[in-house]
Length: 84
Image (cartoon, rainbow, N blue to C red):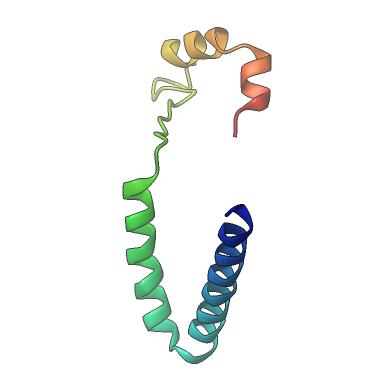
């Protein structure tokens, strides 16, 4: 049963790689760009992670943001080193 699953996965991956190669070689660039734009929208919709950004400096003479400083002190070196 596990062997069947791996063989199906392998053939599916091979098929996807073949389709991708044909798409990249034979489709015009404007169609590739449009497809990638919509594909990225779908991926972002299903992506399970949220990215939140905080500016390090505020607009007031490059003053360091208090929120950024607190977040930086909250996150230890170990957690930020392993983050992607």
